[in-house]
Amino acid sequence: MEKTVTKRKVVIIGTGLVGSSCAFSLVHQSLCEELVLIDVNHERAVGEALDLLHTMSYMPTVTKVKAGTYADCHDANVIIIAAGGPPKPGETRLDSLQTSAKICQAIVPEVMKSGFSGHFLVISNPVDVIAYYVWQLSGLPSSHVLGTGTAIDSARLQAILAQRFGLNPKSVQAVALGEHGDSQMVPWSQVMIANQPLDQWLAAQGQVLSLEERAQIRTETARAGWEIFQRKGTTYYGIAAAANAIVKAILHDEQTVLPVSTRVTGQYGYHDVYFGTPALLGANGVEAVYEVPLTAAEMEQLAHSVTTLQQAQASLPAVIKSGVAEA
Ligand SMILES: NC(=O)c1ccc[n+]([C@@H]2O[C@H](COP(=O)([O-])OP(=O)(O)OC[C@H]3O[C@@H](n4cnc5c(N)ncnc54)[C@H](O)[C@@H]3O)[C@@H](O)[C@H]2O)c1
Image (cartoon, rainbow, N blue to C red; front, side):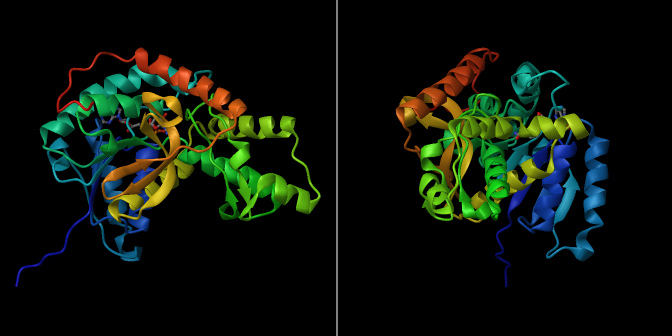
């Protein structure tokens, strides 16, 4: 009798600290049956694949891991792009734009030549602008190209609030919207603590969170990556956990809502720009893009972030599309 097991396959391009952390996390959670590692430094990918091979005796299930080439991309369900180095001291994520764009010019056409028709998950910074660029370069529908966006910032915000209130971060419902970067904003009007609106919960606890404190928490959230960066040169565990939650939602058709960087088509009044907002994730990638209800002041903060990204998008190198353009 023929075997009819459907295999889930993930390819990671760029197996530095972020890519390899994603790989370890994927294997540790047994999220896919096949994992292929690609790096411009092939020996590095080979080393990572060997290291992961030696974990299999202790993993929940065995994942077939190997270092590969772009030909391996043709039947991948998800390709994670984590190529390109962290910003240098004093640079912002947006300063990596031209370098990351050039790297994607080298990667994406090669992937598309393989016949790939799955989903791209972009991590390389500046992630919103690079996700947009990968969408443009690939010619895939925008539902198939997303970035990790504010998934990591939202987790950081939840961690900061949870620590302040002595709760599990899972008991805090809060998202960061806009750029995965300095201009991101927090819609405080929608924050829920222990299933209650923030202000109601604060009143019941006899606590207050002043406007200044809220602004400080927003800044702390946006700058959290730099706090880590200054101490260890880069960040990788948090982003690997966020990326894997997104990959799992797609591979397992979870219908999970997560804040990711996605193309908006009218949400919040914007078109054709990628930024962090909650999206419904399933086997078809981004199956719906949700708009968080915002106050007028919050809309202004989001506008600042979106304008920053639109300007950065406009500075991307021109694209000759390799596939079918999307209206
Ligand atoms: N979105 C986020 O929240 C987030 C968080 C952390 C890091 N990042 C970004 O992730 C990226 C990787 O960071 P890192 O710390 O792993 O860097 P790293 O220097 O450790 O690794 C980068 C890897 O990319 C490889 N690479 C470079 N050019 C390539 C190409 N053309 N094809 C294939 N591989 C190529 C390098 O050989 C290297 O192994 C950076 O852009 C960083 O800013 C994003």
